[in-house]
Image (cartoon, rainbow, N blue to C red):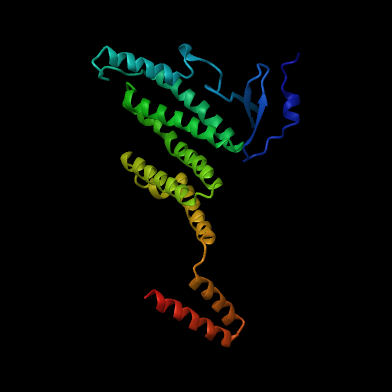
Length: 258
Protein backbone atom coordinates (compact mmCIF):
# COMPACT_ATOMS: atom_id res chain seq x y z
CA UNK A 1 0.00 0.00 0.00
CA UNK A 2 1.34 3.43 -0.96
CA UNK A 3 2.10 5.98 1.75
CA UNK A 4 1.35 8.82 -0.67
CA UNK A 5 -1.56 10.96 0.62
CA UNK A 6 -1.93 12.78 -2.71
CA UNK A 7 -5.28 11.10 -3.46
CA UNK A 8 -6.73 12.35 -0.18
CA UNK A 9 -5.55 15.88 -0.87
CA UNK A 10 -6.95 15.85 -4.42
CA UNK A 11 -10.43 15.28 -2.99
CA UNK A 12 -10.07 17.88 -0.25
CA UNK A 13 -9.10 21.33 -1.51
CA UNK A 14 -7.25 23.72 0.78
CA UNK A 15 -9.06 27.07 1.11
CA UNK A 16 -6.93 29.99 2.24
CA UNK A 17 -8.26 31.67 5.36
CA UNK A 18 -10.72 28.86 6.17
CA UNK A 19 -10.53 26.15 8.80
CA UNK A 20 -11.51 22.87 7.16
CA UNK A 21 -11.89 19.99 9.58
CA UNK A 22 -13.59 16.63 9.61
CA UNK A 23 -14.08 13.59 11.84
CA UNK A 24 -13.05 10.18 10.50
CA UNK A 25 -12.83 6.66 11.85
CA UNK A 26 -9.24 5.45 12.27
CA UNK A 27 -7.91 2.02 11.39
CA UNK A 28 -7.93 1.26 15.12
CA UNK A 29 -11.65 2.02 15.31
CA UNK A 30 -11.24 5.26 17.26
CA UNK A 31 -12.39 8.72 16.16
CA UNK A 32 -9.78 10.94 14.53
CA UNK A 33 -9.92 14.62 13.66
CA UNK A 34 -8.33 15.93 10.48
CA UNK A 35 -7.50 19.52 9.58
CA UNK A 36 -6.63 20.50 6.01
CA UNK A 37 -3.51 22.69 5.76
CA UNK A 38 -1.76 24.09 2.70
CA UNK A 39 0.77 21.26 2.29
CA UNK A 40 -1.28 18.37 3.59
CA UNK A 41 -3.32 17.63 6.67
CA UNK A 42 -3.06 17.19 10.41
CA UNK A 43 -4.57 14.13 12.03
CA UNK A 44 -5.31 13.97 15.75
CA UNK A 45 -6.93 11.56 18.15
CA UNK A 46 -10.31 12.83 19.32
CA UNK A 47 -9.68 11.73 22.91
CA UNK A 48 -6.84 12.24 25.40
CA UNK A 49 -3.57 13.49 23.86
CA UNK A 50 -4.04 14.46 20.22
CA UNK A 51 -0.94 12.51 19.11
CA UNK A 52 -2.15 9.36 20.88
CA UNK A 53 0.94 9.10 23.08
CA UNK A 54 0.88 8.37 26.82
CA UNK A 55 3.87 10.18 28.32
CA UNK A 56 5.33 8.11 31.16
CA UNK A 57 2.16 6.00 31.02
CA UNK A 58 -0.20 8.93 31.69
CA UNK A 59 -2.98 10.38 29.49
CA UNK A 60 -1.09 13.67 29.09
CA UNK A 61 2.29 15.10 29.97
CA UNK A 62 0.62 17.58 32.31
CA UNK A 63 -0.88 14.65 34.23
CA UNK A 64 2.63 13.25 34.66
CA UNK A 65 3.96 16.50 36.11
CA UNK A 66 0.95 16.95 38.38
CA UNK A 67 1.58 13.51 39.84
CA UNK A 68 5.24 14.42 40.29
CA UNK A 69 4.20 17.59 42.09
CA UNK A 70 1.87 15.65 44.39
CA UNK A 71 4.67 13.19 45.27
CA UNK A 72 6.96 16.15 46.01
CA UNK A 73 4.36 17.62 48.35
CA UNK A 74 3.88 14.32 50.13
CA UNK A 75 7.57 14.14 50.95
CA UNK A 76 7.86 17.84 51.85
CA UNK A 77 5.04 18.36 54.30
CA UNK A 78 2.60 19.51 51.63
CA UNK A 79 4.90 22.30 50.45
CA UNK A 80 5.81 23.11 46.81
CA UNK A 81 9.23 24.58 47.65
CA UNK A 82 12.04 23.14 45.59
CA UNK A 83 9.78 21.79 42.85
CA UNK A 84 10.40 23.07 39.32
CA UNK A 85 10.38 22.03 35.68
CA UNK A 86 13.41 22.64 33.50
CA UNK A 87 13.45 24.37 30.08
CA UNK A 88 13.38 21.07 28.17
CA UNK A 89 10.32 19.93 30.13
CA UNK A 90 8.68 23.30 29.49
CA UNK A 91 9.30 22.89 25.76
CA UNK A 92 7.58 19.49 25.80
CA UNK A 93 4.62 20.96 27.65
CA UNK A 94 4.45 23.74 25.07
CA UNK A 95 4.25 21.11 22.34
CA UNK A 96 1.34 19.50 24.18
CA UNK A 97 -0.43 22.85 24.50
CA UNK A 98 -0.08 23.45 20.75
CA UNK A 99 -1.53 20.01 19.99
CA UNK A 100 -4.55 20.70 22.19
CA UNK A 101 -4.91 24.13 20.56
CA UNK A 102 -5.04 22.60 17.08
CA UNK A 103 -7.64 20.09 18.21
CA UNK A 104 -9.79 22.76 19.87
CA UNK A 105 -9.85 24.64 16.54
CA UNK A 106 -11.03 21.48 14.76
CA UNK A 107 -13.68 20.78 17.37
CA UNK A 108 -14.94 24.35 17.18
CA UNK A 109 -15.30 24.06 13.42
CA UNK A 110 -17.21 20.78 13.93
CA UNK A 111 -19.51 22.39 16.56
CA UNK A 112 -18.28 20.06 19.29
CA UNK A 113 -18.25 22.81 21.88
CA UNK A 114 -18.01 20.48 24.88
CA UNK A 115 -14.74 19.14 23.45
CA UNK A 116 -13.51 22.70 22.89
CA UNK A 117 -14.26 23.52 26.52
CA UNK A 118 -12.43 20.38 27.68
CA UNK A 119 -9.33 21.05 25.58
CA UNK A 120 -9.12 24.75 26.48
CA UNK A 121 -9.46 23.82 30.17
CA UNK A 122 -6.40 21.63 29.73
CA UNK A 123 -4.43 24.39 28.02
CA UNK A 124 -5.26 26.95 30.72
CA UNK A 125 -4.31 24.51 33.49
CA UNK A 126 -1.05 23.83 31.67
CA UNK A 127 -0.29 27.55 31.35
CA UNK A 128 -0.92 28.07 35.06
CA UNK A 129 1.32 25.13 35.92
CA UNK A 130 4.24 26.35 33.82
CA UNK A 131 3.90 29.89 35.14
CA UNK A 132 4.03 28.59 38.71
CA UNK A 133 6.81 26.02 38.37
CA UNK A 134 9.07 26.88 35.42
CA UNK A 135 12.67 27.01 36.63
CA UNK A 136 13.13 30.21 34.63
CA UNK A 137 10.51 32.90 35.13
CA UNK A 138 10.82 34.23 31.58
CA UNK A 139 9.82 30.83 30.21
CA UNK A 140 6.66 30.81 32.32
CA UNK A 141 5.84 34.33 31.19
CA UNK A 142 6.50 33.41 27.57
CA UNK A 143 3.86 30.68 27.72
CA UNK A 144 1.20 33.26 28.53
CA UNK A 145 1.03 34.39 24.90
CA UNK A 146 -1.41 31.49 24.42
CA UNK A 147 -3.79 32.65 27.16
CA UNK A 148 -5.84 35.37 25.34
CA UNK A 149 -6.76 33.20 22.36
CA UNK A 150 -7.51 30.23 24.63
CA UNK A 151 -9.81 32.31 26.84
CA UNK A 152 -11.58 33.70 23.77
CA UNK A 153 -12.08 30.26 22.22
CA UNK A 154 -13.37 28.78 25.47
CA UNK A 155 -15.77 31.67 25.93
CA UNK A 156 -17.04 31.24 22.37
CA UNK A 157 -17.66 27.55 23.03
CA UNK A 158 -19.41 28.06 26.37
CA UNK A 159 -21.41 31.04 25.10
CA UNK A 160 -22.57 29.22 21.97
CA UNK A 161 -23.88 26.33 24.06
CA UNK A 162 -25.80 28.73 26.28
CA UNK A 163 -27.27 30.55 23.29
CA UNK A 164 -28.50 27.25 21.87
CA UNK A 165 -30.87 27.23 24.87
CA UNK A 166 -31.71 30.95 24.46
CA UNK A 167 -29.84 31.71 27.68
CA UNK A 168 -28.73 35.18 26.60
CA UNK A 169 -28.15 36.58 30.08
CA UNK A 170 -25.73 33.86 31.16
CA UNK A 171 -23.95 33.91 27.79
CA UNK A 172 -23.43 37.66 28.06
CA UNK A 173 -22.15 37.26 31.63
CA UNK A 174 -19.60 34.69 30.39
CA UNK A 175 -18.40 37.19 27.78
CA UNK A 176 -18.17 40.03 30.30
CA UNK A 177 -16.20 37.81 32.69
CA UNK A 178 -13.81 36.80 29.89
CA UNK A 179 -13.26 40.44 28.94
CA UNK A 180 -12.55 41.20 32.60
CA UNK A 181 -10.08 38.29 32.79
CA UNK A 182 -8.26 39.53 29.70
CA UNK A 183 -8.16 43.10 31.03
CA UNK A 184 -6.63 41.81 34.27
CA UNK A 185 -4.19 39.61 32.34
CA UNK A 186 -2.83 42.50 30.30
CA UNK A 187 -2.68 44.76 33.36
CA UNK A 188 -0.74 42.13 35.32
CA UNK A 189 1.65 41.73 32.38
CA UNK A 190 2.22 45.50 32.28
CA UNK A 191 0.67 45.74 28.82
CA UNK A 192 -2.31 48.00 29.44
CA UNK A 193 -2.22 49.22 25.83
CA UNK A 194 -3.46 45.78 24.74
CA UNK A 195 -6.76 46.30 26.57
CA UNK A 196 -7.79 48.48 23.62
CA UNK A 197 -5.67 46.77 20.94
CA UNK A 198 -6.23 43.07 21.67
CA UNK A 199 -8.05 41.30 18.82
CA UNK A 200 -9.49 38.84 21.34
CA UNK A 201 -11.00 41.58 23.49
CA UNK A 202 -12.32 43.42 20.44
CA UNK A 203 -13.89 40.22 19.13
CA UNK A 204 -15.60 39.50 22.46
CA UNK A 205 -16.83 43.09 22.75
CA UNK A 206 -18.36 42.94 19.27
CA UNK A 207 -20.02 39.62 20.08
CA UNK A 208 -21.39 41.03 23.35
CA UNK A 209 -22.79 44.06 21.53
CA UNK A 210 -24.47 41.83 18.92
CA UNK A 211 -26.02 39.65 21.64
CA UNK A 212 -27.29 42.68 23.55
CA UNK A 213 -29.05 43.86 20.39
CA UNK A 214 -30.47 40.37 19.72
CA UNK A 215 -31.66 40.01 23.30
CA UNK A 216 -33.37 43.38 23.11
CA UNK A 217 -35.17 42.34 19.93
CA UNK A 218 -36.31 39.07 21.53
CA UNK A 219 -37.52 40.75 24.71
CA UNK A 220 -41.34 40.95 24.80
CA UNK A 221 -42.52 44.54 24.32
CA UNK A 222 -44.54 46.27 27.00
CA UNK A 223 -47.97 47.62 26.10
CA UNK A 224 -46.52 51.15 26.05
CA UNK A 225 -43.74 50.09 23.66
CA UNK A 226 -46.31 48.44 21.35
CA UNK A 227 -48.41 51.61 21.29
CA UNK A 228 -45.30 53.74 20.74
CA UNK A 229 -44.38 51.65 17.70
CA UNK A 230 -47.89 52.07 16.29
CA UNK A 231 -47.64 55.81 16.96
CA UNK A 232 -44.45 56.11 14.92
CA UNK A 233 -46.08 54.21 12.06
CA UNK A 234 -49.15 56.46 12.19
CA UNK A 235 -47.02 59.61 12.13
CA UNK A 236 -44.96 58.27 9.23
CA UNK A 237 -48.12 57.59 7.23
CA UNK A 238 -49.52 61.03 8.26
CA UNK A 239 -52.54 59.46 9.99
CA UNK A 240 -52.69 62.22 12.59
CA UNK A 241 -56.10 61.29 13.96
CA UNK A 242 -54.89 57.81 14.80
CA UNK A 243 -51.65 59.28 16.17
CA UNK A 244 -53.60 61.52 18.53
CA UNK A 245 -55.64 58.57 19.78
CA UNK A 246 -52.48 56.54 20.36
CA UNK A 247 -50.90 59.42 22.30
CA UNK A 248 -53.96 59.47 24.56
CA UNK A 249 -53.66 55.73 25.18
CA UNK A 250 -49.96 56.03 25.98
CA UNK A 251 -50.63 58.89 28.39
CA UNK A 252 -53.32 56.88 30.22
CA UNK A 253 -50.90 53.94 30.66
CA UNK A 254 -48.14 56.24 31.89
CA UNK A 255 -50.54 57.90 34.36
CA UNK A 256 -51.44 54.47 35.79
CA UNK A 257 -47.78 53.69 36.52
CA UNK A 258 -47.12 56.95 38.37
